[in-house]
Image (cartoon, rainbow, N blue to C red; front, side, top):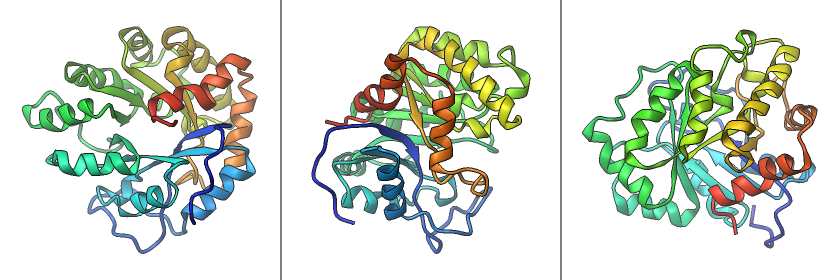
Length: 277
């Protein structure tokens, strides 16, 4: 689908995935969808919900083959940005090519994996290039492990984005291991948090929504609205039967954000972080 004419930013969805069946799959994967989530369907969801722009994040089951995501960026350059998964030895020429296409981050999806030693010298070239390009490293991992991962990345000076509230367990409340430390990271700079995936917080829908409201209030105090952003997490992999883009918007609306916080979450933070003009 060709790119539409450039329009003012009404809202930015900072976290979504696109894919079709038949794409090359990662050798190690926890899940494989049995349906398609093509770019055209995603753009239709954006339009239906009044969003002008979106950010595509490489799904873990496709590994470092970002071909489909990059095709989407090529077809809709003004409205989309990308977060890819990369081999650790990716060279500068390749990263600069990705930057021209609209990539602005590298995802480390560490759910169900052994934790890497991000202080190891083997990571320095890639992290250095990410920093020089003004990209960020996106972390997807349970909250108990997030502080140590962030602290390992901080010496490299890269921007860091934490997925889905840091994947806490809503049933354990704000006192659970890692969450207090995650909040303190807000005062150290260069860390952002995605307010997304409320339905992934392990509790009942009521527990998840109640916890998300408490967590968002605490995050706003410690991070400030300018380092918080919202994402739909479309097409809600592993929750496809119970969630939709509209339902994720409804969950966000139920948080009852102030006008200023809503503006930051849906427009201002993502516009700056992902370099939308």
